[in-house]
Length: 222
Ligand code: CA
Image (cartoon, rainbow, N blue to C red; front, side):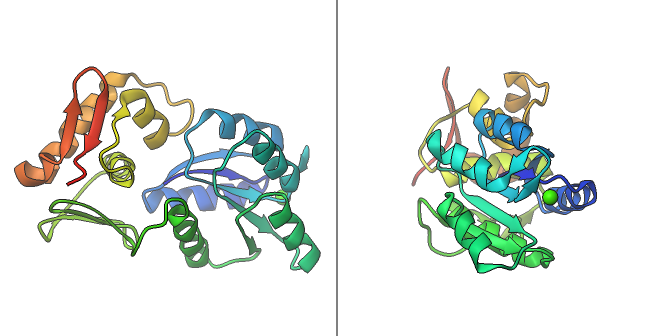
């Protein structure tokens, strides 16, 4: 998942960025409400992890602004306040879920998975295309039951494609989804990673990643 972490506690940002990246998520971070909004408006995000107390405003305001701008990206609010009023305010502001600090990292992951499954609803925690199975719980990929060792970026690209079976994603869309915001890359980079990904998936798996000439890439729907 491409995640944005809006949090002003530098230690928490470092820790969560490290853990989430190890778990193969693409992570952007912002320490102010203004930077958070800027990245949220520019990047192709799967979810936002949003702190309430920010130096230049509250997470509630960020959530309200995003919803007012028409963004439907799932928002998970982090709150240090275990008060009912605070949680209600967060949900009313347009957040989808909340987590009270301090929290267990595994719970954060579970809630992100749940958010990622909201629209469109899916069954189970695996994404599939032909012989390719991506398990979102343990973040492993197999082809015909054989484990495939993918790099973080290859995994992120495959996940993007598998989430939208049959849908063509342009190189720019893949760059926005699978790389952090503002990464200095060219569409040729995407091409190179697709090539690596196909090679690692082998002939049976790689054949499911189709090139649509002049447009982009898609995973075969069936
Ligand atoms: Ca804070």
